[in-house]
Length: 135
Figure 1 (cartoon, rainbow, N blue to C red):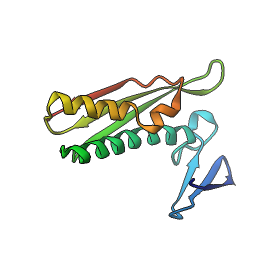
Figure 2: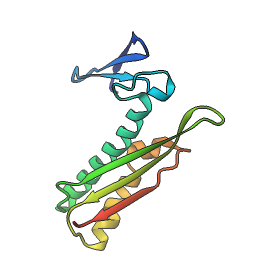
Figure 3: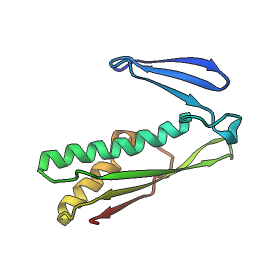
């Protein structure tokens, strides 16, 4: 288990410290929810977790199979909804891999990304994902 400690710093900001590495980060409420939007919001971190998790498991799968995905990128567009309560309603993902790969490699990498631990943890959130291969 990994422990992460948090402190409310006032003015809708929180500090988080990752126990194993002591790396810290600050969150700020977004402008549309009474904050200043000067850092990642908690829901931004959810989107960040998804994109980085997808790329990480793709990297693991690629390494196991000697496939080159160096330079792969992802972007996540977070969509908020207010009904019945304010929450993340969708996370639209685009993954770009700058190399041409065989169809079986593509399928395996796409499956790995779509089934990363974060995606599997999100449940009811829509996660439309588009992959772009080659330049």
